[in-house]
Image 1 (cartoon, rainbow, N blue to C red):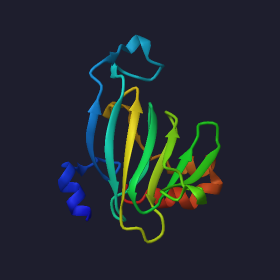
Image 2: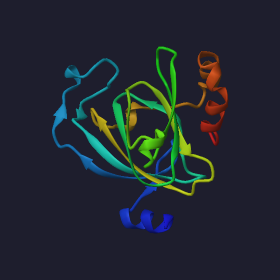
Image 3: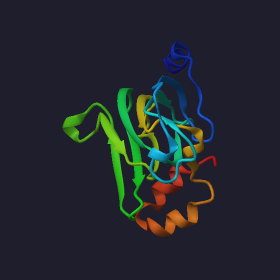
Length: 169
């Protein structure tokens, strides 16, 4: 089924972060740089959206982006997600269909938040979507590579999760 999904949507590996993706929407309207918050190096589309597929070997390694990102769970196995907020707080959650057991079908990751996600347990795959606003640009992506020691110190209770989500840097 995984290969069928990749082929159906023409997905490709997401550089550096991991997982497979295809862009499904890029709003043609743009926000000028001088109207954006600090940290953007140029204009941005109002919004972008992708489909995102993770597997045991191809998952979302620890990273952050400048914009808010809303995750949408579509199908497959539950996904473990870690969010490390700028104020030192952390959140561990599960994206999935079983909302009565606390799984989330939708989740907001505020811009600037370190994040990573992988399949929970022995999961085989998960198909997610993300909507980013202001729209995603690779210039706004920052890998967790090289930040491990700082993250371990700032979020000591999440050391095991950080280690898991930094694999293959």
